[in-house]
Image 1 (tube, rainbow, N blue to C red):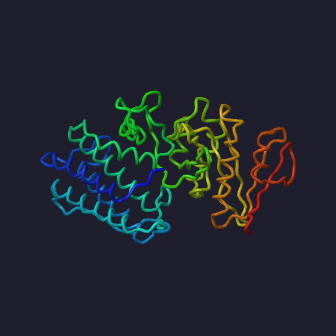
Image 2 (image 1 turned 120 degrees about the vertical axis):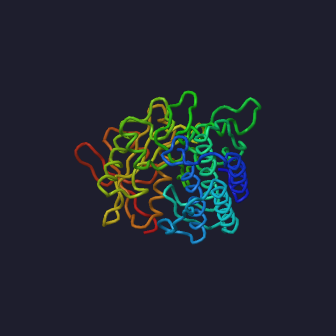
Image 3 (image 1 turned 60 degrees about the vertical axis):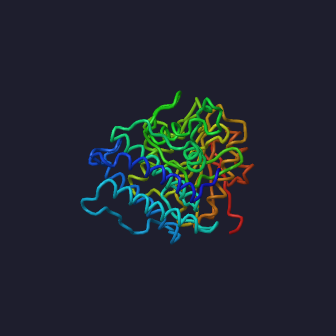
Length: 364
């Protein structure tokens, strides 16, 4: 992943301010393109994001947002809103520049360091500038392609890249790709996104990465959608859809625990989702949790499931409360037996045509 920094935030804020000042004479009470907010409210939202991200980094927030509220004074004109964006963008830039390499803070899309929050700030201001301008009738604005390219690398590792542009540049059509990834545009050969998120901290293995399937994405997958992923032609599998249904149901029941649901297995070289893996729930009172996985047929036999399960197991034992990870497979499912054994699971019993496996915390 490329690393983003305060200079990226400064560049994005500068582009935003310049573009929005050019339309500050227009009526910002109209809806922003594709949003329920007005252009005025969307600008305030950008200010809220910048300020919130700066606050998260400053206090190293652990489990939620710092309780701040940002609003514009009554009667604030568009030019004043742009001032708010520039000022709050400066707050985030300063917080990113001052944060040490070990700084980490909470975000609902994954804990992140300074580079992650810089990328989040950039994606928020670029996308919402696009939304505001679209609502005001400006449809041809594009940022410097280096910015969306870096955002894609940092926050959207699961999104396929379109071919390089006509000039052969490394960034390809990064802006169009980012718009597609966030439900704002089209890409050839891929369905329009109806559910999406970014990933501040995916679980990374050598050739695959695991991206958590959020409840909203899970509901979309269970209903027959993509969940925001670009799937291999024979995916997603029925097992992944069923597991996603379990995540959606857990959210409805109030039992969902972030991190302890389903993940999409994404192949790093082409950024295609090739299966699902995850947990049946958070660890119980005895510290036990159960895992399962589902790989599309075209991806089997390449060691992807083994890599993914090693990485996911390491993540799980790094969380508080887990002491034993279990899995159950059919007796005749030789490939799954092989995956579990290669990861270090050992047989823990049989019954009803199934074999139970267990992996204990090496540090317990």
